[in-house]
Figure 1 (cartoon, rainbow, N blue to C red):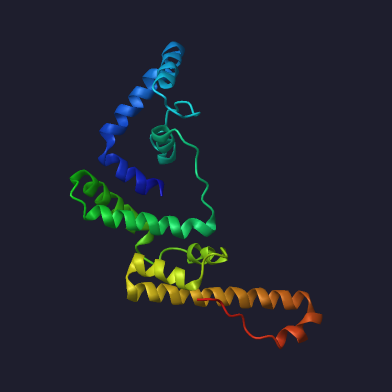
Figure 2 (spheres, one colour; figure 1 turned 180 degrees about the horizontal axis):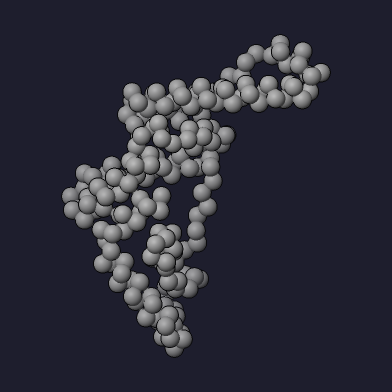
Amino acid sequence: MNLVVQDGLKEVGVSVDRIRAAVRWVRQSPARLKRFKEFSVLEGVDCEKSLTLDVPTRWNSTYLMLTVASTKYITSNTYLDSISYINTVLKNFHTTEDEELKRMAESMTLKFNKYWGDVRKFNLMVFIASLFDPRTKLGYLNINLRGMYGNELGDQVYQLCEEALYNLFNEYKRIHLNNHPTKASSASSKPRIHLEH
């Protein structure tokens, strides 16, 4: 994701460089920093965070510098939502009249497709992990995949995910029953797991 965002930031590099230079200038002197904080209070800037200088090769530090906010922790069950959201934003930017945003989107899409464009190249667990969130159902996964890859390819990836999920469950069941042989007879009569769509 860092490389995807870096390619996008190159298109607005001048703006980011100006902000970086301003932050560096303010932070180089305790007197300047104190004066900056005083002006922030006068202007009614409601922010408890201090100015931070980024590491240009890391987009998340650039994000923190630009927004002066806390980081958001991504967990595996929300990763699919993040990927899907980025994909949607990039598609929308391709149709914007703002030429700068369009160039950013084109550059970022190339990098995005390098990692997420070919379904044969990434681990399906990224998608399957979202199903372990009790709010997510198989139908929601299918909608996301169709949105990212189109109906036909999205359905194919969905089938692979569903199949892999059942295989994971059956493997878990096999290991569990081997470790608890007394439960094997009662478990064998239970129906196969059914997931809500």
